[in-house]
Length: 437
Image (cartoon, rainbow, N blue to C red; front, side, top):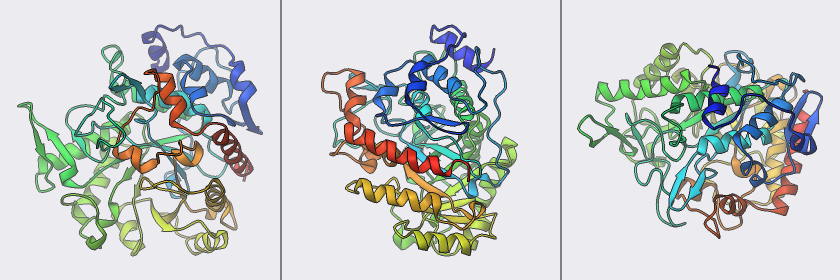
């Protein structure tokens, strides 16, 4: 059975789809490129998964309405090195999950619901969603805690499936976690998006579940751990993801360790070359984009490592500076550093005007579209968060902002409201102008 129809059936829905009038009333469009804008995320998150699917089919780029979901959906084709110029937008899928009491679940279904509000890929380069969490976090996975109790996404477990924050445990016996990810990827693809996920490589931030029911600390000197790391990532690539954001990638092989803020040993340089090669080789997906955090310094080092692009090199405050660096790297099509609107360490406080200026420089800072550098954004750059939280806080903690205990209340209170809606419209205007460049 086609995976989207299977998901609908498991959720108690029929496979027959109808035109979503709500989406038609909220769409932004330029030519055939359409998405939902001038909204707050709660407007989408309170809808059903079927309504989200109908929304994506209604606004899909082909212009054809599908009364049942198409059996074959291909990833948007921008060539093997698509990641070199892409716009990466990290979505904290744990933060938008369903908070029920002290439990957190269904993050992948929430991310499906929010897909229609992510701008589809422009003509010249891909937009790619990066999911903040896939693997279980070490402490408190599946639970939300107080706003200042640690529940970090940066500590993960391998060899024990996927995070209960993210998968739908209620239906996993009928549609496996891997199938849930495949369904998400198909839905992203019909909307013209690439997808990826964040991973960590600091040894003391990784636990390995063993057959005895315990955990051991990951060790880069143990081949069985290295092979497990490779195979866990290969499985995710085979489910349809095409990008991996690698935390602390700058310091692989002991490079500039005086600025290293992770915990534990990192893989060696040649070891990481082998790992990246094997992920591509074993998955048989040559298009995988490896994104390295903080790729400043020796750019040939990152290119030869096997990375596609990296963050943190250029501050997009000055449009002309971004344009200068895009010209400098215009002939480097294997690897080039990128422009960072904001990152996972963003502590908030940046004005809407500043964020819009940074997005503008990132999207337009080049002479020709083929010269564009990759850009990196967070959920907060598209959908502003409430005043007293920020991107980094939500990576380190997992609070519910519900005022009445309901799932809906958390979604309503996680994000800025009327001002957030108007800001979202301004972001949509910026993306609108690049769609056919």
